[in-house]
Length: 331
Image 1 (spheres, rainbow, N blue to C red):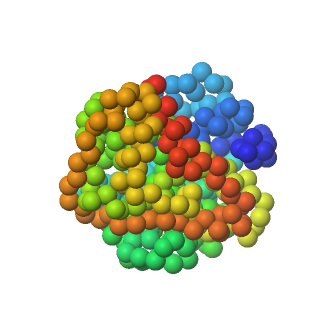
Image 2 (cartoon, rainbow, N blue to C red):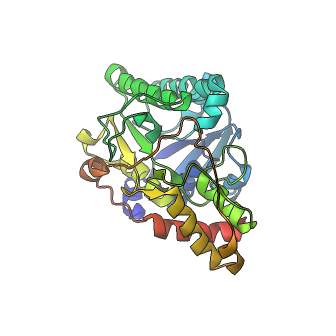
Image 3 (cartoon, rainbow, N blue to C red):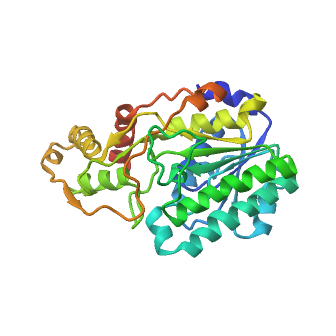
């Protein structure tokens, strides 16, 4: 499916910010596999150099080590590109609660710098990573793009501000923008280490080490877990669409089904036990719910299907099987 979308990008030069990260490196890999010229801007604060190692010898790949909080670095990165995939951000709700200033500096000031640099360089389209955290305390399910609640964390505020700035840059400077509200993305290269590791790679690493994963709460909280290949597809659709009605708006990027944390750990245990039978006996533990977390998350993907032709190919089961296989070989 991605091959057909990428055909329209032939001859284009694409900037991927945060390209050393989980999502960014997957986007770069697909673009380079199809001979598209790519520049990566990353300061390696959370991204990993090993994620870029396979690309360094590719003549279509250019790495700029810089920081989106520095306008000069953003201008340098945007100077010769046609399109931008802006993935650079400081993620994690708990991290934003602990350090709201740095989260704001990166996610708001850095985002504004990138918009300015893209505008100044005459970039034709700016696709950026938004977040499902924008829905905040709005309880209705599924989440529909036009209806949001009150943010529940500094991180959620920054991602909502991104959407407001993107809209202003379209109406004021005629920059075409598309925001993608990611719902709990998972897959290869997602870092299992650190205090703010995402739940799936962290649980995988713990199971592999025969350590007990710890669920926040009783396990009834649910998420719309979204495999990385679905996210890559959405980025390419947003980048290549010729439908003017599909631009200058935001989309949910998800599969459209929810899985409880209890169900997730059961699936992970099942798939990992195919590699190590002893994992079946690893105990699951629980602790109190985490501040800033929403109980349930489920996306409506009708807008993406209707306007962009989005057709997610990986549900939670097929996605987890792919991810588990990759982690088993690479942990």
